[in-house]
Length: 280
Image (cartoon, rainbow, N blue to C red; front, side, top):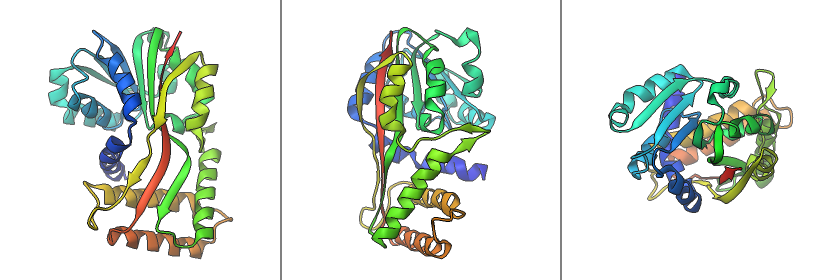
């Protein structure tokens, strides 16, 4: 299962590369390239954001600290990113953000905080004030790939059932509980504007960062067919025990969608938002 998830994280890199909003990325770039910018990445996964920043030449002067709650992810980062560790000021730590924000030594230490495809898995209004408190006065944040209530599969199979699948899947996000704590919001992207304001920050740049996965000449780029198969797996796991969704119809729907991937015919779109801003 761990290897499966690691492959998923790798497979979505090219999807994220296309999705990240260029205007918001540029706003972040203007900050991270300032001399000795102290950067914290929350939920760094296997280090794809670090690779992306390096490719764009944005780590030359940054002092970059990446945390992830999975020690296996941190170990993998330290192995696969060894050339970048030797090249840049990179450090890694296996730490849960809920523990990290409780450590007073971390408060007010960073110029820029990155959270990539991460915040929409949290109880945002509960944790965001403490996350922003990790920033120095005038520090900046860059929150990317925040899901915002839109999931589309094309072509249509059954319009009514397609709509039901999307609706109930979004409900599972809203109802998600992790370790006894609410941990999801299917409209987290749009809600982040007010959550940021309430936490003492201000959004200064924002834009769409939709996932758009489609075949070219019947083939998906890179490992994006696997990415789509994984997305369907999430739908299956989330919906298979929901009483609102007929189990036989769901099984047929999933089989058809998997066949569309094999045939190079499935288009998948997920609406998301990127936000950049500053604290006082």
